Length: 313
Image (cartoon, helix red, strand yellow):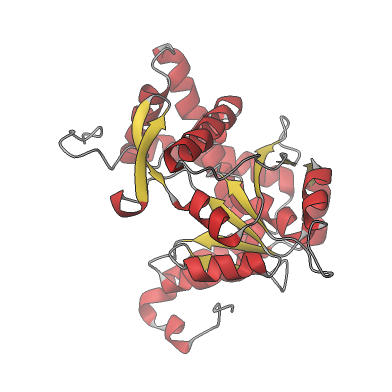
């Protein structure tokens, strides 16, 4: 059941600044698409110089993942990454507030035959649900607009600490399909129920969610806390597991969304093997499109017992 309902408590004075920010985001979303791309790049360059802690995290992550790269190449990636993060802020406004008719022509869908063939596997006239293995590329908000238009989609997420932001975020993610919903990432029962009813669950398992829900598996050769949920969700719900990739087109004219064939023999009886397989898939996707991956997240925050932190600031 959806829970993105308005409450008068959201109008308390302590949230007024958040409402102002959301109004600004709404107004910016009305600007021409190309202008927003240019403004986003400019904002990203500003963020590169002002968000020193986040810049350090991005630099450290890239150092750990690409030790074979030259310092110049790594710094070029960091700067490009911040530019794409600036663009992503504008894209979030477009995803939440821009009319779909303005966005529709911006999407290129590839691999459509894969998701259509899976849907047709349903029985008794019901569509087949599935588990979508997604990633935290900074195009996720804008590309989910197109995915939501293809089929009923549920999205695993962590509620924002600011209730106004959380309300707008949920509304923005659900508005393109009346049957879609966002589900708390700890609500396993809700996610399984949605998939059994024919929904496709968007689940990004490429971040550090802490030791309680993770196993340590190599990530670019570095031991990383890896969310153990995907194999379990697939086993409980008995649905196909499909990976998707998404990226900006080279000239910033739109977005490419690609559905890959369903994973074969997944899950197996070895969860460590399954998680290694997922991480290898993630690594391949990141190498194909490194500037749009969310490097500012502390991917290696949780360490094995007795191991020192990899971040120092």
